[in-house]
Image 1 (cartoon, rainbow, N blue to C red):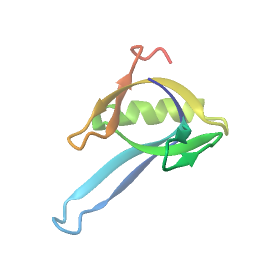
Image 2: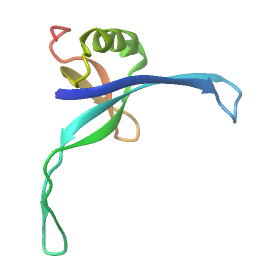
Image 3: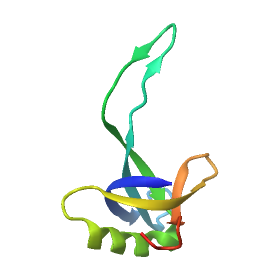
Length: 101
């Protein structure tokens, strides 16, 4: 899936409940707004919305490095492979075209 990535970041810390360390890499993808037009509600918009997505642990380092190298102050387009987590949320897990971005 082609995505426009605005930022990639990693949050690290110590879990309050367990005391275990954690590290989570996330990306902000810009996706086009879609108009909604039905009997009860209308929303006509133009532009992009930022959607936060998880980045798979195995792919995180490579993805961060490639984004940092390509980022020149504007979002970067990548063709990415997505997978669903157990809560049916998209997770970035690799390159859709085997790393030829």
